[in-house]
Length: 212
Image (tube, rainbow, N blue to C red; front, top):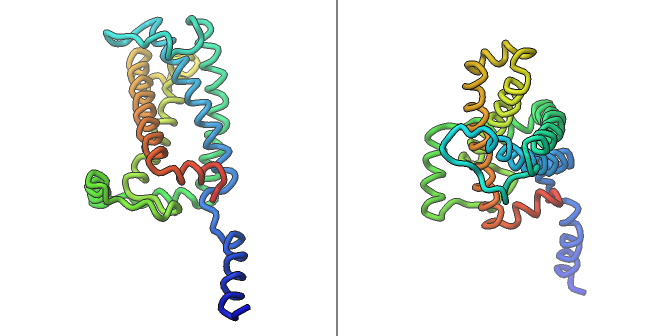
């Protein structure tokens, strides 16, 4: 065996063990639990919305969950508790480990505009999955904020008397419903973009499963 060949073999064997983890276990676990909880909340939320629409449209029954108002409410609140507990774990670990600081900040308008331009011209690189571009930072920060708003506005709608200060903060019961709806719409919009990007860059989905 030539010396060069032996060195190459050793590097090849060592490479997998030295491969850098992109997503730690807690990120992957909380990500998938949040994904399931949010999908359940969206489907059941659309069924609840249909019982008392805010606008001149309703959602097709085929994409709602619960079958009727009472069933939808049961699904909605079951998923809400899962989302709240799991979301608190995610936020706590995200701040405590410094992941949010490293991954999501800072976000500057100039960087966002530059990355949007690069994306529209198909020049946005996805080689390093451990680094978020400015658009990703904005989207992930936005969906975290939307998740917090959707939970708090949901509590204001659910218990407007018990949480009257919170309901007042959202402008009253009726306005809280609009806030809740638009926060949900923002999350749905994020999911559409998120899934589309995962399909365009399959290794990002693989990384969220294997961590590498």
